[in-house]
Length: 292
Length: 278
Image 1 (cartoon, helix red, strand yellow):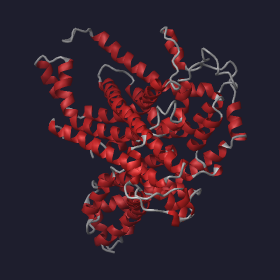
Image 2 (cartoon, one colour; image 1 turned 45 degrees about the vertical axis):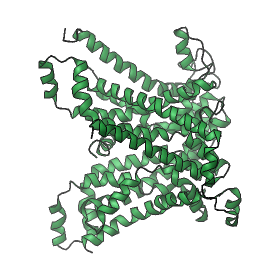
Image 3 (cartoon, chains in turn purple, blue; image 1 turned 120 degrees about the vertical axis):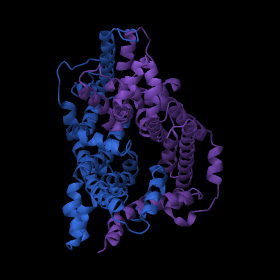
Image 4 (cartoon, chains in turn blue, red; image 1 turned 180 degrees about the horizontal axis):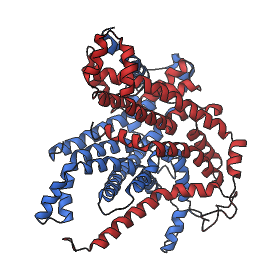
């Protein structure tokens, strides 16, 4: 077997799996989103009709879709910067020469990342419990009255964001930490000789060099946060008053609760378009600022 | 005093204080989970919540396994995650090595298509995939849960990045001696790739173990459910029983935490191969 033949043979199994169980379904999803595939079509394929863009039009006229989109955007717009800020802060702390026991702290910060989201969501639902929760107990020390974190439509989303930041910041922290460690020490040395304060060093050395890492982390986090699902599914079931229904939550309910698979495919595609627009926008801004 | 007008001991105290505070916030929910899982039924429904049980018990764990079938879910999770890991490591390694070292026609173009496909969220494929597997009779089967995870673009990418560092001479010499490509792969490439194989295995296992949406969709039969799916449905039915829920969370979370603690060096390195150096 020639190496080039072997190349095809070696790549073929993985490519087949990806093509068959990912590529093909993605293309089929586009077709599916143009049909009224529902529980009747599931029972008998003859009931399937081509509806062109009806699913998309109906979605854009569906208040719940806009609600879900709004909730997801809320999660992304507040959650992503918060998450990245905490990650960067933690990385700076771990990178600082002043800290002790760094391997321990690094592991502690990272532990939530590897935990199963459903299991820790169950924990946080309990922590946020109005009467028995530790969060309200801690707040009572500061003289703050109990807050109905998960039962009040205004607080449900912030609660989920807090949970998500807790769960995820360690991941980006590791990447930031590697980026920080790659910055040559002499740059800071030179800046110190010139009399630059810590704040100035951070602004004029750390941030610009970290730019590409920051961009990559932002894109990854953005993409991840658009895919909010398990948290509202476990913690709030989309409530109260649909305040935590996310786009994917809507997709799941449309598809696998009501069996409107055509409609759900349209939801998935709209989410994909939205994610593409958001990440492209981010890259456009980064390019204009000279990052990359 | 340094230039920022802060004495060194104060700066040190602030940095370490923040580190301790952040570590406490990271670990507290997990420690709390352990503490509550050992409490008597109903003990945690008090205010202020007790931090430790007055008489710790394994009752909740016993109930979970004896009455709630937790052993079954644990087995399902282990089986599915192990199958995914073994198959994904093999297929992704073969492909990653091919993309790095075996120059087949159209290699770069195929790879570019794969990279472009990375931006498509998995959820887009779920509806047709469900219908496909239904046609194939794989809904409510272990195979249905395993199939989409058997190979992945990110895994291929990870192996490719690493395999590029294998010197060409190492592969050319046995070729001249007439060794077949398969033999070269198993005798030379696999040993050379060992560090990244460990990383890939951890990623695959954790990914499969922690996955929620796909098992939720494909495994509605209670006997086949994985831990996260079972835990989610448990939490929807028995919202009151906090002690039992926390025990269920412990069973779900501890295996992955242990895996991470033992192999964290490999895991964290893999994270960086896939991101910063990418």
